[in-house]
Picture 1 (cartoon, rainbow, N blue to C red):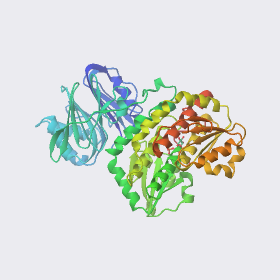
Picture 2 (picture 1 turned 45 degrees about the vertical axis):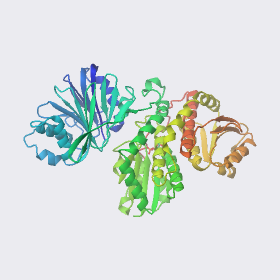
Picture 3 (picture 1 turned 90 degrees about the vertical axis):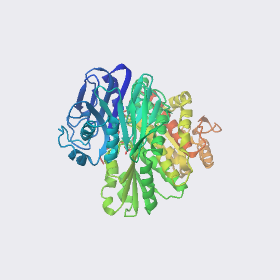
Picture 4 (picture 1 turned 60 degrees about the horizontal axis):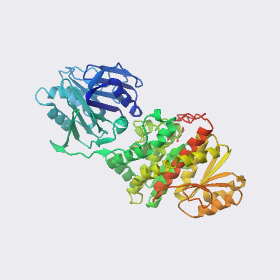
Length: 572
Ligand code: BG6
């Protein structure tokens, strides 16, 4: 997948302002990038996005590429032009019939191997006899495949944007408009956005915009809702000391973005995944690390709607699971590149199994191995410890379960997480007192058991303290022997009351109880404001993330890049 941007403003702006926005789309691919402006800048480079020649302009289009058609070369980098150089475009998606369209343009000179360049020449040919708006309408009728495109035309004050299958949104700024693959790109410019739906086309100027939808063969004007995106905290790390805390603060916004995406452009893929689950005799999740803890919640939510599923740690998958043509394997992986998961999937299709996946990095290896794949839309996650991607994985799995039977409302998650942020000071104080310990235990039952394991993993990864997360009922079968005077035990309150008696077993031996989600009957507590299990579970997870962050801060540890670990383990 690629990232595209278009911007048109009343006042002139700098080309590197657009590059800064493009940088936020880098998670969508970074083989090459480019930019074109109405004041003549046309620069493309292979490799990571970096500053370009400074140039003041009123219109610009820009692109970061993950190559699908054509090698990683400067010529194949976007933007692409027509023969005259008057039409410049950027594109995300795949034009499946581009060779057929290209054949209809014999007189045109192509300088790249891309499907995208065909769009520029197609529009050039059509605009010989009709206005650009009709030329684009013809393209939308003739093209097969997926596209989000922004077109800039020399001497034309409009930008033209149209979409099918690939995401596109319009940001409304006080002095102009920005079009981007993802609202993430303009998160520090506006919180007002419009999402393009399928087969929609917009004409955008510095002060206005018009939306149309292609229905059958006609373009019909449509009115669009303006969404206020609730960004939590500033998007730029510069207001945060570490990516970890920045990414935790992004959670309410990326949850909203995911839900919007699942309700719109990804809904058809979700339906496909549901169909595969319905047809399969066996459903098994495969994942590693934090992603594995998300799948445990997936198993829980599916179980509650009568769908049986299992979760197996990827590195042991082949030893503990039989696969045949009745099996659906669901890989859950932030990076989409974890070798343990790739290894687990290898050869499974030959056994007749189907593969589905939830990934955060589009076009990753595991996504490309899948029969169907959903993007969890958490945006680029830099910190080695997974935080926002975990939250979105769980929201996505709960959403999937609710497609079988409406039991979980995902709508409350953002609000519940914001309630946790309001207790940050208290969490910080508790974290400081935990920093001196060598062992921390976390217990939970039911839907909170996976969260107990996830919090313990966070504590180990980032604060280098030995931590164990387990089922509350399991404590008495051995681990209780390790509880001494003052040993801290985080107790995830909620769900079954038995957890209280497990906590009392700890208290009776001098252990220090910290209630997560309680009201302090047994010791210190951090409250949770959530009516449903999903919001309760994720609120507890976010408390664990913040506790870990502040423990590590107290200990003066690196946080974003902890020792011995990597964001993606591409080795077995
Ligand atoms: C580890 C990461 O390397 O891999 C963890 O440090 C992550 O944060 C685990 O949970 C699994 O990664 P992925 O990309 O498959 O979810």
